[in-house]
Image (cartoon, rainbow, N blue to C red):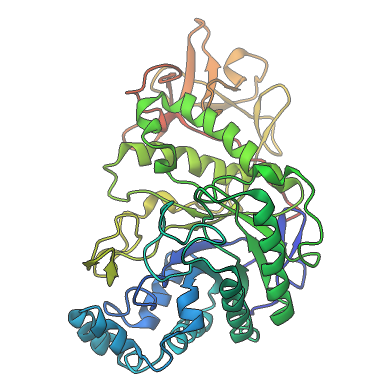
Length: 469
């Protein structure tokens, strides 16, 4: 995996993003909102900007999806500075916090403040994707907020195009701005594919005119859960090597279905839905999972089950991704001051990382390398050893006798993440993780029907490495 050290133009090659030397660049991003009424990236009242940027790097992210509103780009209150906006919202405590942590920001206009944040991320070697999240600054999203689709109350297509033009021009020479997302989560009763295609073409053209070096990122319909309508040909929407698509998904996107149904069956259903609505595009384009997340307190079982499934799929498909979200709290959200964000990887004071262990997906580069043969044998590369099931509660072992049932590992459940083998007495066992983190073999659990059973300790995935990238 290539780590960007000096920013270069990115381009697409099939399903991958590459830099100018031709190395794969994998987006591992975090969302940082700046689209609410304050029109300022969240958290500058809690920590110095450079401290936040360094925390982003320390947590292993190489990219920020930085959101913005058309209101900010158009800057209807051109004479209004940050301190005035915050005063108009009654945010005296936040003003004091910014004075303590980032005093230079208070007398900046909103665009200059936004530019300073982008530049500081660049100083810390962090790529930025500019995401047009909304038109009228505020919390997103609902079907009736007037921001959902072209022609809605606050979603004037011409004003939107002007906003894209301003942002593309403003950051035309900013090397760490590598992509621009045309619009977040199109939705609502007026959405349709024909109008979508017209304006996606127009938006891509505007960006290409102002900044031909930046990637153009296109979202789908129904809160960006659905790109299935793109099975129709989509040509000439932008220059070659510039286009990728984004998709979103959360546990709550399926209501409480992850709790109501058997987790294996639900994960299998999600796999199929995700393929039909999104991952089919990976035959030709990169796919960017630009929003996914869940309650990091660990108390939301619906989110926990979804994330266990989603993490497996992300690794299996080697997806580019962006976690929602960075912030531990908001200046002002839906009329309330200081709202905590339980999906955030930073705590409410923007200081410590908040239960972020599930996203610590470690590199496989220096791990043992295995082959999964057509006979469903797991072989240690370069040897005659294969992985074999042991007795219940015991760790699997390596052996050279690979022709017995213990050495055959099959995907057993609908999730495709149970690996099972057969003991000499005919019992079926699955790989499992015990209470101290040791891999063992145990009876397979939660395979069907039972909605109260959590199979997460028995979910494993066989990942095919792509040495060409």
